[in-house]
Image (cartoon, rainbow, N blue to C red):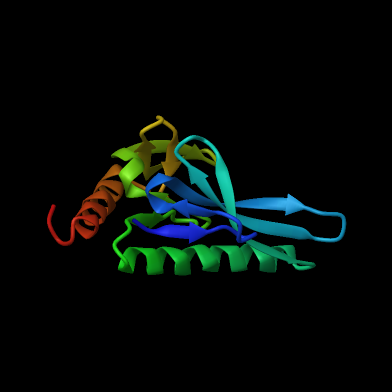
Length: 152
């Protein structure tokens, strides 16, 4: 079982209970910070990394890079997290019931994406937008093959 230390160092959270990682933007008087949050299966959360400077966009970019690096390290060690297409979050595969191809309307155009349906029935888009259902279905097939280590 793997644990991740929180930002303040007074708590360690079991990865088995982390549904996802997300970035929470926090506005202070003198700057905008980006906090990387571990959202837990009991709907609680823990702050695992804080980026605070006067550069709000830089903080957000640093938080995205941190999540990508964290997921890369965790997955090498046997965890199974998948980054969202936007890179501002990652989902624990253990909490995903199904993946499906969903239809969205964006700026008047019909697009498709692959969504993860979590066990608590919240949906999070995990892919970029596609112009056709066929493209989304191809992406889903490749995703499943990658997750399963080369087998569909």
